[in-house]
Image (cartoon, rainbow, N blue to C red):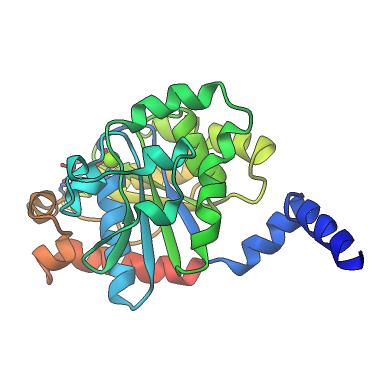
Length: 277
Ligand code: ADP
Ligand code: MG
């Protein structure tokens, strides 16, 4: 009788907020890499930073939360060859363990174009922002770092990513004055904190495709921190054809051009992330 009552109390507790906070202390960081602007190197940053942390002997899981499935292809995996992907997880058909694949030194939750359809399905569901977070729970203990590659939108999939995360990292292209998207993202993050994930921490921004030869790049770095009160985590990632070439070979710049400046920059960024989480 006593143990039966205890079981009920324990079940109720895990669903409460204090249960969640306790859980968060146990798990490694879950980092959502988000910016609703496309082409700012979200996917590249998830892949390369993940690989850099794996080089440092961390256990890393990458989650592809974009129906375009670029992260999946970049890891040398064709979604057409897979029976199940994150789409099936979001629909509650399978568990996340069922879809994890190994890609070089990383574990990956692959995506496919089908994921676009789960947005519509989720819209009619109660608790729709929490689906990914709940699905990830059973596996986060097995990893030192989990990265979520968000889609270029602020839709329900990205809200799932931000709700599942302990931290958010914001890549922005340091080449154009197009960082206004960052302000809108920060507003969304405030909403997420208010409604679905009050512990979400902004780790900072990452300057990508940086050209140190021009003053524009430096000016943008200063402007991003001044305008948005956001720390730009050093170092900026230099623009390099080596980074752009790597995906079609199914790997990151760390193995494609091991000693390039961009590879070194991502390795330094990995150490900064280690220090801050
Ligand atoms: P997002 O996920 O934000 O849409 P991607 O990571 O797919 O952005 O990057 C957009 C494009 O820019 C890709 O073709 C990628 O290879 C390229 N790219 C990313 N980082 C760099 C860089 N440091 N130098 C040159 N090209 C880059
Ligand atoms: Mg992408």
